[in-house]
Image 1 (tube, rainbow, N blue to C red):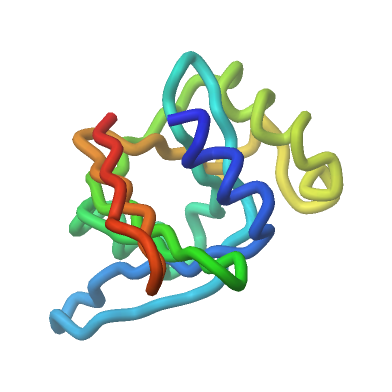
Image 2: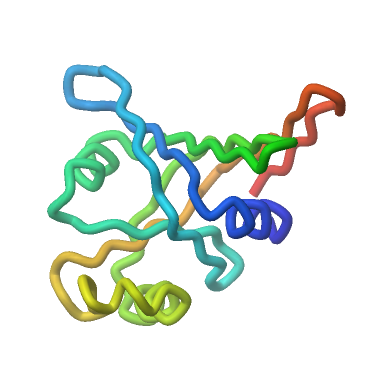
Length: 131
């Protein structure tokens, strides 16, 4: 999982795919990624449509590309309402503290469960990591 985290941090931006209520896919850029208590976390706001989509269907996939390789991570997102998890994320992304707080009713952190990460390129055999 450390390799997945480092790749996503290096890329800076990844794209998260969810499903809308009508079943249509929705993809948007994300930039927050965190390792906390040996779990891979993302962050969003509960008022956003992406949060509502995840609550309705927590199966998601993200994708990132570093110019040579790409990474896909598919799994189920689980909300973690603990202040400690939110604080850890916000401490790693201090600019977010202008918009979010670990104790507000909007900040949401979620971790991947039953995830499959696949590193791919045009020149190498895909590498799979499960966590």
